[in-house]
Image (cartoon, rainbow, N blue to C red; front, side, top):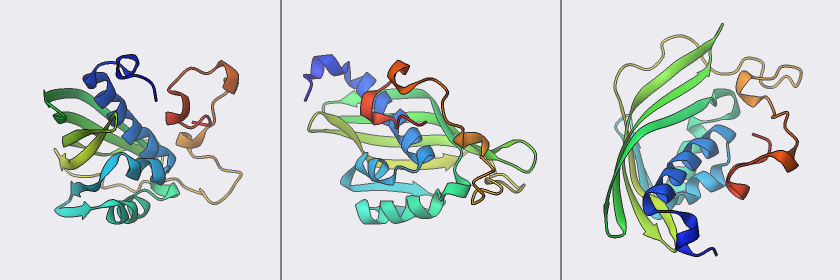
Length: 175
């Protein structure tokens, strides 16, 4: 494991965890997504709570099947550190394919509590609070099961793998 100085500040490490959450959601890497939470971590949204790795896994598989994936963006994060705990407030937006163009499906704020465990910052709690209604038009990839139709969010990168920069193993090479 790299020494903590090489990993950046705690704020940098927390921002990386916030970004990995989005990338793992959008690529359907459920194992890594669940791994961003402590064992008894919780995700709260729409008045429901999903607590612990098995419940988190069931939630994300149901909420983000391949035809419903899109692009999650998290911005404007304010991080308050207190020892090995961080409270984070961020804005988010979720965009997905619509009938004729991309659709803003939801927007809101994440209220997070992350804790430092074994050199990583992990979610103890994440609550998604919407700031308006969710999309009312149809959304989700059309023809996803047809290999001849590629959803807009699934286009592979043209840059050869050996020339790509990035986070090493934290983001799949094909995204």
